[in-house]
Amino acid sequence: MDCKLERSAQRTESLVWPGQEGFPEDRGEDGLSESFQLLQMDVGYEHQEEEACPANSATWSSKNVQRKQRHWERIVSSKKSKRKQEKERRKVKRAEHPGTCPQHSKRFLKALTKERLLEAKHSGPRLCVDLSMTHHMSKKELSRLAGQIRRLYGSNKKASRPFWICLTGFSTDSPLYEECLRMNDGFSAYLLDVTEEDCFSLFPLETLVYLTPDSEQALEDIDQNTVYIIGGLVDESIQKKVTFQKARDYSVKTARLPIQEYMVRRQNEKNYHSEVLAINQVFDILSTYFETHSWPEALKKGVSPGKGYILRNAVE
Image 1 (cartoon, rainbow, N blue to C red):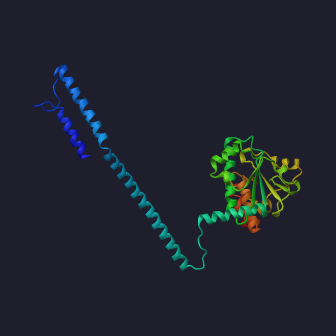
Image 2: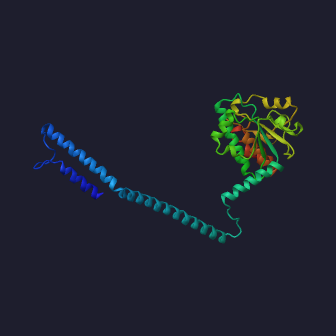
Image 3: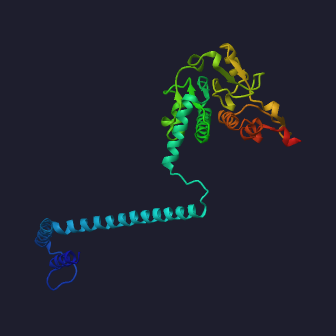
């Protein structure tokens, strides 16, 4: 760099007329012509100089690569040091608390979750989400339903005794499918069944129970040989007895969650009480009951206070 600056200064000085400082005065056409020639010579000389010294550019590039390499090596070294410290910390913790379970890696937990879900496909209870009624939904309603599907799947992954989920009446070229891909990371890799077939043609009708708040029959227990159906609807699009009427058209049994049996209405400012739940809330109730066999505990988890209901024993 210093060499280049020195040569540049020398070339600049060559343009200064003898006995004068700064730029030359106007000496007419001959003076301009001579100055222009000097400039051409200077530019040509600089170009030849750059071609003659490629080693300088290569050296600079090499130093830049070395600098980046050293930076990367420091990062790798730091990560190794942190991993070693964390390993030592866990070792000390296990020594202090020998009775506690070892902390498993994310890879191990992911494999364990996958194993449980695949086992549920063969031996667990089945739950269908009927998505055949989404063609009249607005963009906002589809977004809400996509979010509920994500939360439902997340709850099922965490369950110690998961269900096998089947999304029926669900076309891969539908707006809802596109919304699920947009909102739910990794949706295409979810461990569940997706089919365009209707739930009534997919399973024997005698094995089906459609869960609807309009049914007169309360759900008493969960049978692993029964396929339970939840209507894929959201609050804005709910019309009274739509899912109940659909089940009756196919002569399929219906049931409602035992909210009336275990809960009572709570007074609130809006005097609002509703047994209509989001599909993920219905699933949370079913999943909790399947693990605990306690309806009060299951309903407490799934029925939010905003629905206007509380457990009977909470009043007493």
